[in-house]
Length: 292
Image 1: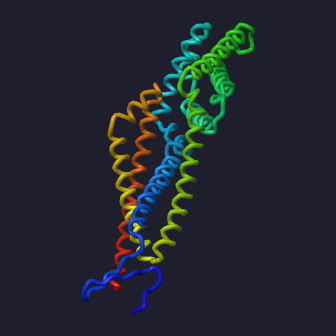
Image 2 (image 1 turned 180 degrees about the horizontal axis):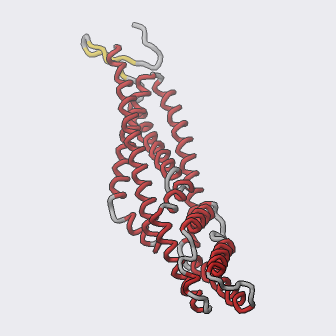
Image 3 (image 1 turned 30 degrees about the vertical axis):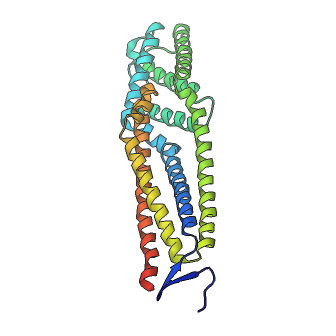
């Protein structure tokens, strides 16, 4: 009886059993490949949601947040203008929603770019100055006299200082550094996951030397890792953890909460995708028995 390389036989009576090489080793590889898949899927989901500047800008510039920021900024502008004896008729709704939308997008991009100066106070100052001048001219008020210029300059200087100090006192000031560190860590984990998956898969290929068995083990890895990933994301996403994290952002809690919700939903989707791919590979791996 010829024995093929990598295969051993043992007899009991008239029966012959095939002892496929190292099933225990294959199971260990399945476990670690599953961990690698979770690392890849989880970090990729983060990269494409809460750590993605385009997603953040898309959310922060939605009407609800733009209106909220416009109302807050106009209230501050009106209060500071009143302190500098500028008529309320000139400062009512001085900042437009389109300008605030542009400013919010700029601030978000600066945060994700890791810049220390996340807000361009000079730009906001210029926007307010232009709007104030237009309103004054429409009301027939001369903007060339020394009294108006002095009041306007004092007001704009105070406005610029207020915005800078206000932003510095919020979590947004530290957010740029936090996001930069998280992005670096996320990228590192993603790369480690990719390398681990490739190395472990090569070991599995070398060890099992059968395309059906390899597909079968890949399928098991994808299924169990997908189940864990989707379950953990679902449980965390529906717990109080996202709300507690979002509450740290003060006025931006609604925005952060939405981004976290999008992130956990995306992780769940990737988990379900892994499960679906796993079942396909598992069925493919079971074809070996049918072929035999």
